[in-house]
Length: 197
Image (cartoon, rainbow, N blue to C red; front, side, top):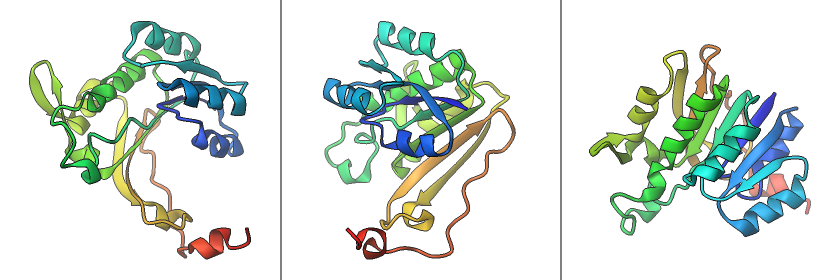
């Protein structure tokens, strides 16, 4: 399976994806220092540095990703986060980056899309054609009808991570319902995870 990651940072996901046999052939990151570090870690992946809203950057992403099966997108969460609620602008432009993710879904036609963000994303509204639209409704209304969408808030502590961290996981598939992972039977502590170090 071949993948494109968006808002990739330094590529933490890529290590785990590689363990599952998923080849990340292209990635996009806004900040140069992060993109440069990513390139050192994953020289075989085509890193496209710059804003996904820039036409040249967007077109480069499309050009190198025309044979992918999976898009993973983790847009900036600051404008959607409850922790930033008092400081966040009502119309934070970072929230509208989801529009470019939707455009790439339409342009690249992958079988699978995974979007991860804070749970506040489900209650966030963006401006679309002068109207305030819920992000999740925007996604549903602007991708092809062949896709099935499965959205749920998951807690990382239920999946072998020694941290309570709620995240909104959106699984989109043209292959039928993409099931959420099964919870682990046991939660682990930080001592169990890294106590040996």
